[in-house]
Image (cartoon, rainbow over all chains, first blue to last red; front, side, top):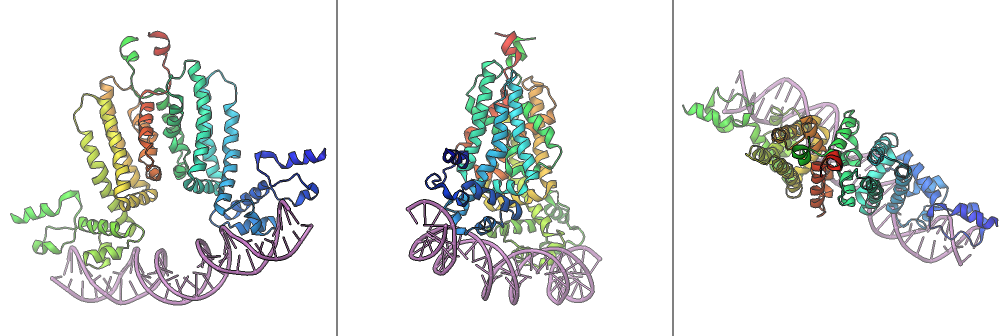
Length: 229
Length: 229
DNA sequence: CAAATGACAAATATTAATATTTGTCATTTG
DNA sequence: CAAATGACAAATATTAATATTTGTCATTTG
């Protein structure tokens, strides 16, 4: 009984744990991936991504550094794992909460979602600078990680856009293309390469103005020009 | 007579020359700013922006490095001057040619202008990598230089937008805001921080898709929904 | 006498010697 | 016997000594 419960406690978060069920007698001595990630995150925040060694992380855990290599095949993979968890927790999780809210104003819902993405990125750039730097560094090298992250966001935007189309508020064009274009057209406001431009207060108005542009476009439609009014 | 002509020859390009008119007997010995910039550009292309010293530039010219400091107060100012001239020649000049063309399709004209900007940036990133790197480095430090460059482009876009509004093709909203928003919404395609993402072939479709988005917007207007058709 | 020089100090970059870190794997531990 | 260890070589980073570069300015040059 307690066997099962313990296993559930240990194996949360979808991690592929080192087999934790046979011989459960040593529960505290079994090192989990998330314990390593906790220690890595703590160490990264202390020393910064450029000064943190695998040895430092091992020291934090009071173990041999060789042990970490039994869980992550390289320093780079460890950095990616830390970044992936950080992105999931700090960016994807709060965004998912917004995405799943009920609404009868899909346009506002979409704006809410996108603006939250921007706010989160800009907040963490400022208040969790070491981890944000880590994220910026890792995603510049790992196309895989950034692709997964971006696709996750575009996927959620797809759903919101779909709701807008159903209610005849959004033009019925290729959804995925639209989601991607909205994401890219706002790169300046959420891409880490632009972080140094976020200090300026004018950034808030710029975001609103770009949002207005992509909402209505600059083109005066034929309806407005000829048929109507 | 030949005095005046020589002066004109020497003082082209709007440079503030070291007074070249009194005592013209030594015409070849007078060092012009553009000669320094030529040598700097040549040296920068050879050694790259991180390995080029003021001494290297002086060597290229066969002069003492102290002389360069009589024309530019610091290495950084020299780098800025090289970058500014490069931008004017490689980006602003060809853009101005397009901007000044006559057209009866202002939307196409605007697209043409913006796509040329993107094409030029992407071409020089690939085929003049040292100077492009120089530009990327300098603009990250000098807000002044990048502001001037960006404002120049936005100014030219203003004119094109104005033509579109006159012909009732572009919505009559605040022109400057619109120009800036179009510029920012396409940052991914012309901002040097994104240069490493330009390798991917998919970038061409992304540009077209973002252009379509900012042209028409994603919002289904009331005209389309209710009044018309 | 305007323009260039080159000697100089301070700042910065390079080099070479030294130390640490990364990643592996045979051995140890519980 | 699964998990951890720690000794080890190769790669990378740090340090300290050395060399170059930056920027100034009194002196020289034409």
